[in-house]
Structures are given as C-alpha cells and as structure tokens.
Image 1 (spheres, rainbow, N blue to C red):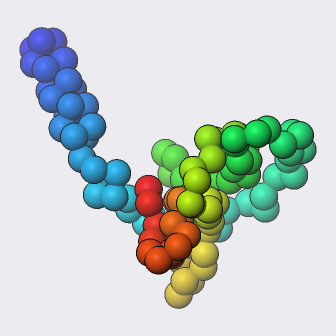
Image 2: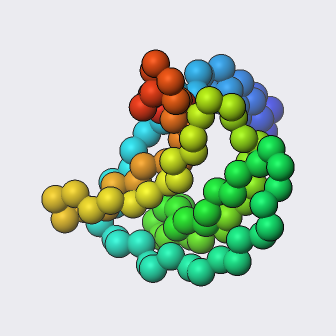
Length: 110
C-alpha cells in the first residue's frame, strides 16, 4: 500500500510538471476579503531584477501573507503584480504575470 501511494504521488508530480505554464493559470474565487496589504520596506534597487510586492494568497481556506521578493527582469516585459478584485460580491485572485511590450503587448505570460 505504501509503495502505491508513493507511485501515485510521483506520477501526479510528473504529470503536473509537464503542463505548459499558461495551462496552469487559474483565477480563484473566494467569499472572504483579503486583509489590508502589509507595508513592506522595499530594498535598494538591484541591477537586472525587479521587486514583486508582497500579497495575501489564499491557502488552506484562509489568507496567508507572502512577502515581496526580487525576480530576474525579463527584457521586453513588464511585471503585473498579483491582485484581488471584487466582482459580484466575491473576491477574484489574479496571479502576477509578465506582460509583453511591443507588437504583442498586453499578452500575459505566466
């Protein structure tokens, strides 16, 4: 039984890693408003990186604060941070994404 559980978990992990990033994107709807954003001290700028601000994520039926962090800059792209938006009385999570500049601008890349 133990070997079956391990094999199932391994297969699920491999199957999930084979999906393209765009296919893994899902907006989340919840009925609980996120708490106010926390104030973060943004470190001094770093060449070749951008600061992604912290955000409340939904995990295990409640909001959890995930602090800001640096990510490698992507030439030709701008980063749109994750946001919560209220729609028809519910809260919708839009994960952060890179947005292309140029002829295909506005295209979100996850």
